Amino acid sequence: MTNQYETVFILTPVLSDQQMAETVEKFQKLLTDNGAEILNKENWGMKKLAYPIQKKSTGFYSLVEFKAEPELIDKLEIAFRRDERVLRYLTVKLDKYAIEYAEKRRKKLNPQEA
Image 1 (cartoon, rainbow, N blue to C red):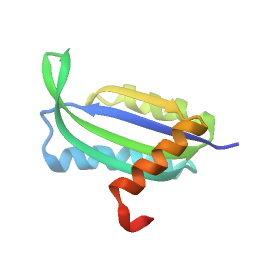
Image 2 (image 1 turned 180 degrees about the horizontal axis):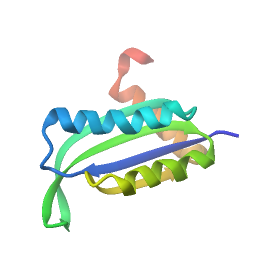
Image 3 (image 1 turned 90 degrees about the vertical axis):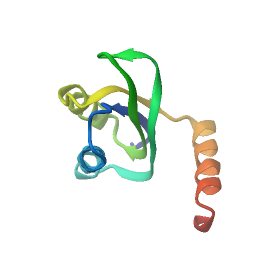
C-alpha cells in the first residue's frame, strides 16, 4: 500500500548551485529507483535558519512530495543521515486533508497543470 509523503531537507550552504542540484537529484533518484512516484519537487533556495546548525546560519531548502511504500522512508532517511551535505530533514506522511491542500498548492504554483 502506497502512502503520500512530503520531505523537506536542508543542505549545507557551502555547496555550489551545481553541487546542490546534484545532491537533490541523488535523493530523487533514490526514491524513483525504489518505486516511488514523485508528485512535486520545489527548490526553495537559500534561507536563514532559525538557529545555527553546525555553525552555519543559512541553508538550501528543498521539498519533494512523493507516493511510496512505507519501507522506503527508512532507506531515504538513512541516506540523509549518511550524507554530510544534509543539515536537517523531515519526512511526513500526508493525511487526506494534507493531500487536498498539497494538490491545491501545486495547482496554484503551476496553473498550466490544472
